[in-house]
Image 1 (cartoon, helix red, strand yellow):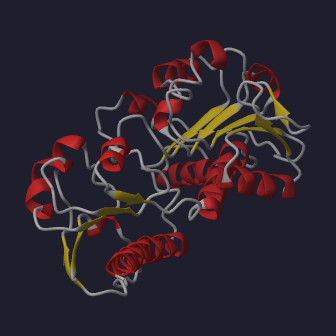
Image 2: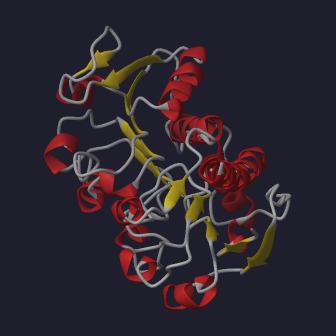
Length: 322
């Protein structure tokens, strides 16, 4: 039996990514991008859907009776109505852990920029070259701090969080994890309120769940040191963005770095853009996951998940016929 596989959004791939095909009998169709109103049209004959970012909700899925499998080129599965899929026999696979190193490295790069400010000083040199800032013998325009011996608090305990802890400790940082209401025990875990009060860096590396939505709100930000920094490469909704903006504008934080926001993709009207000219604010368009190495691993694994699904399906059919 041949599977009809539809790749909904290949514009999510870097030009360097080599997209292999599943090792099974199949037909293949791919689109640059699939808008919500195009989902049914693009998937009408599909038995397998491959997506990097296109959401597949119940209103789509219930009109796609041929669909048997969704392969997500993602770590999480929140863009799919998984409960509906489980109830109707649609297999959903993702690629957990593929971005552990690349997101951890990006988190660390953001921490280093907020502490060392190399990009901020480069912008200053551009202004000096353009004549809009005076030439000086020594420049103290931006505060520079070492990360050695600084306290890093990590919300999360998955592969990304563990890899970030490893990298940070190699630089001499002290690392502790949030204990999630006493569910995790050990010398490296602390209650959230305690962590917020002692940390120099708060790194968000956890999924967005009902438990973590707005976990870092105004009262919790108020517990932090006025020169502490917040780095979020997890999910935007974990941090209340209005409270974060207010804290930075009123100098109650030493810096903020975001790779994720609550409403993506980033729209120019997002209130976060009122901070965009600040040198203590970094805003990236959800790209921490997308190093060339990580993206190749991601797509290879997403396609392998399709091959494995078809192989299991064929094996089950042979057993039933035997």
